Image 1 (cartoon, rainbow, N blue to C red):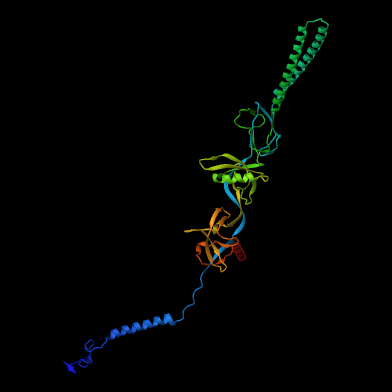
Image 2 (cartoon, rainbow, N blue to C red):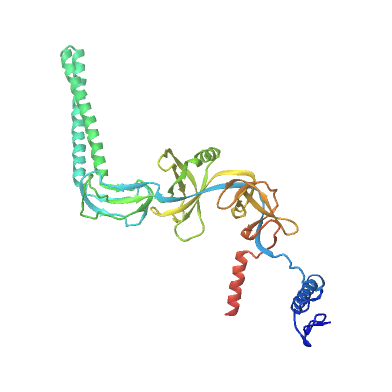
Length: 411
């Protein structure tokens, strides 16, 4: 049927297609049809990719390289480290006891001396003269005493014959007693003279090393001089003084009751081998300002590695825990829920296990919560989570040695 030149059934106008002009039901625009076809194609492609396309193989879980250690059980010494000052066990400033002139110096600076060694000789001519005069006075008084005793003997004989009175005998006895007292005074004067003469020979009173010599032959020395003639410092044995926190005092005293407490000191000489000594003194007062107590240790110092005035790093074993479980301190991790360690399981996966740390030192952490023999992570814990797969890495020392060997091989 045609109406006004329009074919309503077919949508033609004067024999030409006119989009949208058809009025019949079921007519679809070609643009809509194109969009529908494109959507069907995309859905089919995605469906094929999701269900029919081959899937890539799942990646294996990443393995974390770590260093591990085994939980040890045994005696753990608790060491406390401190900075100590080396000082001579005893120091003597040599001074004269009388005013005199130095006649001779018998030592050299830096010389090692023993008790009794002659250091200086002073001018003692005046003291020797006084000693000789006292000795002569003693001889004269001894002669007078002998004469008085003979007079007393004759007086007693005459008294028995009634030729003299009793008072004459008493007078003779008094003279004898007076001369005896004079002789005792002379003997004391001689002893004092000998002491004065001995002051002219100045000897060492301790074994040690001499310092700078300040007096030489011809120097006038006096007892009240501000500058000593020489100083002797005892360095064998020698002392190291340091301080410990007051909280360590109880454990230290208990250890000292059990026996000598060993101390190791690392001298400031560049060496890595420490020297060993023992605590010899604990101060009787805790410093309230710093909360510390002063300790002194004595060292044999046969090699003279410790020198007065230098510093030394000191380690003291204040307590020993018997049968304790210990791990390297780096193995203990602190998290939001407390402290724990990563335990390596038989399948090389890690599991965080809570632990209780009793005490921690630079060398070991004493813990509770894991059995002995358990392998725990020491290094690399920052990259781990529960269930992470781990493998043991090469120790740092071996890695450094390997790299050095490789460098040598290249050269």
